[in-house]
Image (cartoon, rainbow, N blue to C red; front, side, top):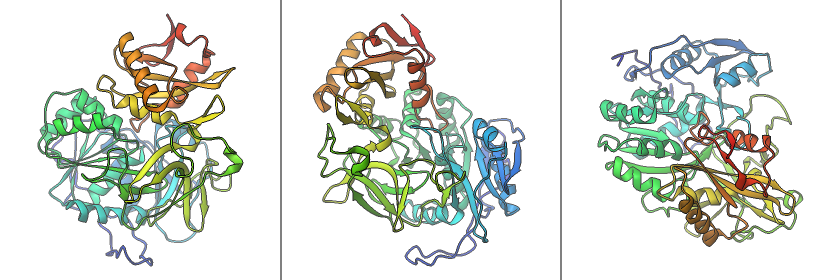
Length: 474
């Protein structure tokens, strides 16, 4: 361990009244009480100014945060990039910048259902929620945050920035394997953990230890299933698990507590307003949903102080996807769901992931939730294959040992719960799923590998996905 590497954190220059709509725009500041600890040897982060924005290649947590610190100190907009995004943006693609003195930065979406999107948001949009989380969870300079994801993903970057605004310590672990990350959390006595459900499952599945120091687990970027929640209770017995729903564009929308139904993602986060509107008829006509009442399910529109400004790369009038729309101050990014009478939000997946199976729109995320809840499944992905008779069929890709009886059990389980049309027609077993920087399955890579071999519904039993996520003949 590097011991005291350097002291960095952030404080806002003026107090914020979250109930006052005329907030004074804030800027990130570094707090002297925060310390960054890392077991990774620091490597100089490559930086480049493009269109007035400091592009920072995410090499490791320590080096990346040093570069962020420098950009903030110099009053320059910054963008933490993965290797791929850095190479794309440094070619001179024009990035959006402000014409006033509003402090902004750029971060990246997970890219689980398409290419990762670079978005531009104000410092204030994150500072608003730092203060709310501090008060709600009673976070302080005595806390320490375990950073298990890459900072090129907005969830990990948010966790690091919140820690430094509070004056909490940052434990950098993103370059370690899941078992080493768990050991580091135990050794460093981390108290706060932000992670995706996939990352949380990996932590629990790669250690038999328990960690008593972790008091708060914030799970975002995907639905937290009951099986994973039980694993967290065993491995982190003192932790309060708070599932939240949001996106890189929206930040927090809802957050759960111990009383929230496991199927929901909680109630509205402070200062958030949500409208559920019918899916536009032009895109989906009169096609019924296989599961759920179409009268109750609609697109989620959100208004809050935490929304992004615009996509960083100007295209489609500032939209990187046709599911992203603004209306009357509300933002929709194409997520489907419904609210119950008590105000709990239930998700029904992304509109862009809906698949036409035999003239019915089905949602692969329903099958993923069922499969992930099975104790034998570490994590999974469900993707669509073209089928001449049905339009498409779904197949599951499971990270687990090859087991024909388990395959039959999982297929039957899905069919009992959501019917045959919304269920996978077959299941492939893999040793390790290809993952994104966010820790989510890389759906695009999985789908491309399947499509590259032109597997159709009549051939899927003759093929399997290889141990590294590639497709091989049996």
